[in-house]
Amino acid sequence: MEHWRMILPSFLLILTLLATDLVRPSHAIWLNLPSTGTKCVSEEIHSNVVVLADYVVISENYTYAPTISVKVTSPYGNNLHQKENQTIGQFAFTTAEAGNHLACFWIDGHHQGGGDVSLNLEWRTGISAKDWESVAKKEKIEGVELELVKLEGAVKAIHENLLYLKNREAEMRTVSEKTNGRVAWFSIMSLGVCILASAIQLWYLKRFFHKKKLI
Image (cartoon, rainbow, N blue to C red; front, side, top):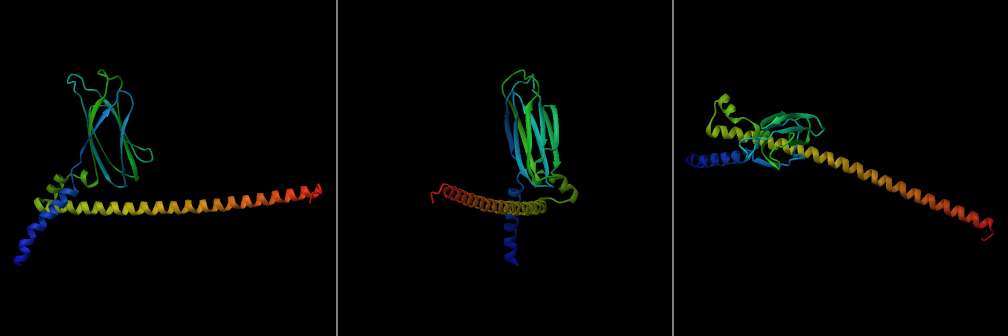
């Protein structure tokens, strides 16, 4: 019993560190938007995943803040979020399709200062997008217990990602096998056509030489 009392604090500390590492906060992405053109970021996300993002325009000119337009699309081109004349904003959605989700930003109208504009984007998905403060208040948990709940959520997210990757691998393998089968049949058909063409040529030449009484 004494042995377990000595091990338990270390075990809980390891679990807490694991939860902190797995449920790590998102990192900000800095984008330099050109005066003309569009800058996009994308991430491959599977279906039924919560996505939360905050963006803000950073301007060195305190008297004038350029505005931007934002458009977020799904892998099949469906609009998930679209706004114009924004200096700060947020978008959130739950993915319905698996694949690359694209977020594009560009400067509105005429930029008075010219040149590039800096944009700070904080993109969170899955377990990182969850509001753990609200969860802690609702469930009335804190400390190590909260970290264990985070760890449980992270493990579930990892398990879902593994299942997604497994399904993707199976789909890719099926496509590869079908493609290989089609290539094999095409090769056989090409070989058959070549043999048939050669046989017709031999028959024609033999007939021609017979008519000319060369053979």
